[in-house]
Image (cartoon, rainbow, N blue to C red; front, top):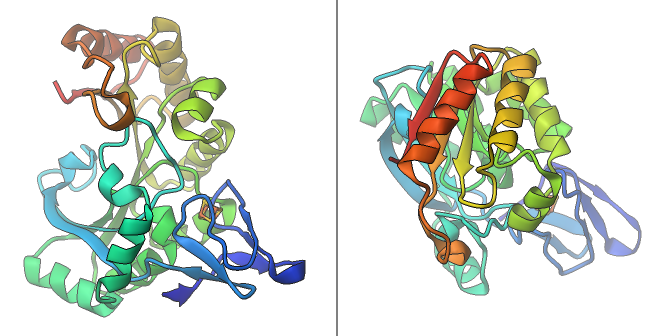
Length: 292
Ligand code: SF4
């Protein structure tokens, strides 16, 4: 457990977390929406610092990043927790901090950023991916690793829901080489209902990253009856093409029944192929169908 970097102290021992766009105001001895940050007697702490819950070596295409260091392996790490509570989460066992999972991470050893870098170098991977859960929620630890990674000539990639605050973006940008952001819908109500979040900050962050010239790829998981209309997919494709650039890769992935949406059918192969055509029609040069 380490004191958080991104927060302000308020009156009556309250704290205002500045790490993501929820900007939780947290009373003493309470947690934020992600449950990974706790106010202890007026100071905000990251409960998951260095507590690695998942660690694998993956092809970078699995992130998915198809146009950054293609054909290489990336050393992928996660600490538990997420600021979204998506009904379709594929990693809910490590992203949703239940009391049981909080006990599990309490018992994990705290691994140092130096140890992570040693493991990456020993594995011969040219990059580190901060992935599986939401890297924003372990930003302090990711940032420590990212700075060391740069020192050793390693690239840093994030796989994110894009809900980080401007302060978080400013902090990570100097060491961030590539990022894949989920643009889950173009409908405000859908974002609220499925993820408990707002759409606008994600669009703002996508534009910010584009303007910073950080390698950016976008993913949309297509869910039957939720975000699979031609109008919505076309709106997403046009936003990417017009605002982020026609060369921005768009990954359109098939949903499989999972977690709290296990009652939905899987996305039809035909729907993914139609989405690819919608992307191309919007002028996108790289549209990749996935999970089919
Ligand atoms: S990271 Fe986001 S969800 Fe977590 S406490 Fe901070 S503002 Fe709230």
